[in-house]
Image (cartoon, rainbow, N blue to C red; front, top):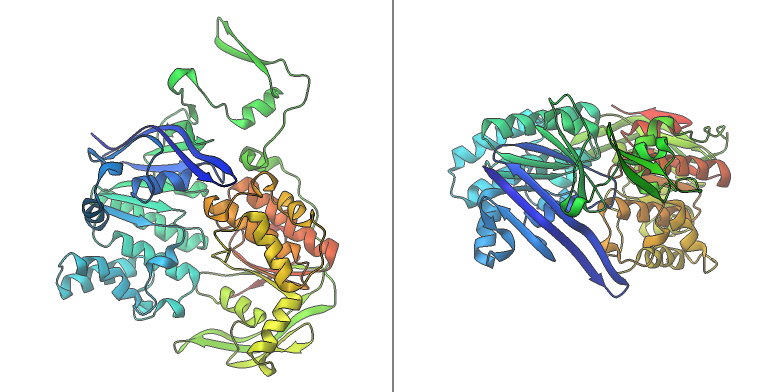
Length: 515
């Protein structure tokens, strides 16, 4: 029996800038109790698929059925009941699901309380889940006292606590180190099978496929390939209605097929040959198959001139030490990465360097300014003049276009710029064709790239990036990592990235490991 039935679904976003199709005739079935991982490049429609299944969006055409009911036809009351009882949903913007006044344990047990579970049942279930993701000792902490990765794990537990029949996860390990990502995948796989929970995970992480019964790849808003985890043949191409098929980019490149081809029958089957005289044009959002053969620029030679320095820094959250006696310097023209397990203080260090938080003790200096001696207004002036910060949530203005977000940041900083500067920097992150689209209509990965473009455009002395590739597919992660390295080398910016991503670490000149 199919738990999820999606047939010929289109999802078109209409904006003053024009229509943008996120899904273009997608068809997919998921069996009851099946675990499916959906892969695909940024902007392929993965998150839109989950939003349709969650009843957050409605299809422009086609049908979406979950356990026999058409989600688009549910009235407000039945939809609320569906979300409360049937559905568990972990959004990429997981922080929105955690009330700031609730502890981790209270957040996990909230949905159970709304369903009438006793206090003992709520406590037992929340403690079980928090233990399984390594957060038992953090159960009394509020979101502000947890790292981004810890908040992500709490949100996961909250989404699974009420034992939903359908669980949807959008990049569930985007900000986790490999050890904690393994715990999360293990928990999802175990709970899905213990309770017969139908599970759909969308991800860029190949590790997400190890718990899946079936792997589906979507491109251009349609299913292009699918295969079972235990099947001898992988990457089986899906033939859509009317004979439509999407050939993997890697095969086309290896065959030398560009913008024209001819298909003919042979004794061996169907043969596709190039008739184009021009070399194949590769879309930067779809070259994930090339990551192993991609040559990246060599790392820059580190400079000896420090842009920022920390000495003997100590910082605690809620009485829990996060950083203890940390010292280090961040040189101009150098790309630094701050690594370490979730909760080791990576984001806290970036906040200290940005003047968003102050150290409990020790010394933090940026461009010659002692941040501890600067008041709030003075720290804001330093940020405006010398610092760009790419936060985990991006911090973009949703109703403005991508190019307007970049131009707004330049205007606020009082930076002189030419009319084409914002478009050029968006082109550097592969978003020139999406420049006039409102941010709210962009995919999560595209928004992440807009935030990076906005920071780069400012040409800061110090650029701080918190997990800059967490929501990007491999191809765009490679591009962004190389771009940050090149920015440091060519402009003299000190780039500091908090990251778990080996693609970013590989581009770094200096690694500072915490924890």
